[in-house]
Length: 313
Image (tube, rainbow, N blue to C red; front, side, top):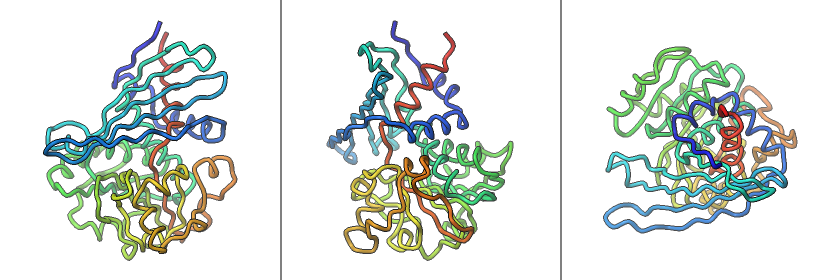
């Protein structure tokens, strides 16, 4: 009988340490991930939305597909931008096994993919994190980074200062102190890790503000006309991607590649390369590293399998 997992169950099972290790194993393995479908959806009186279909499978194991939508205009409606569900099936019989809340799965796997990348690329003593953005993904990114590095101070920056203050208050406590940052440049210069998850079309991470030893985690830009970093940022950093699709899909890389500010042979590797040891992680304490994530169906499958196998029977 097919099982159903709501958001709370997904969040409880997909704790950061377990999911980071599941993603590490998945990136080392042989998961089939056909090109995902992107469909633009016009929304009267609101920004254009996107419908994505993301299939993946491992031979003789599991297969699944995520149907997810990204509606940027939802913020004005008091709704999350990302909605969806994941259907997990047997890759031996095709039998449906589970329906998993796609929104929470996306939030958790995205944050933990960034944490996995930071595990290879951020300095081991990174203690100060800047979170640029106050959306649904922001708290997951903060907690994921704090789970794999000794984060003690978190600065939250957002265009809506009230949201930044509210998120800082919500996150404070435990192993770190969080505060709202009014000055983005000052907060960025002070950070050891800069994580950015916005829907911006104009750069927020400026290369001139970066200092040696920082790690930059870019999550938000999923289209060629969106970008969170300027040309100088990618030119100064050693750049890694989750998959080669990031070079085509995100303006953070597509724009500097088109202008010549970044050359494709300067891309140091993918998450699979890092996980398999085919590409080195951080090479020096003063190196600036940058990870660009656009998401992959491999991550969704790994997370959904962890939910299915980890849930009480």
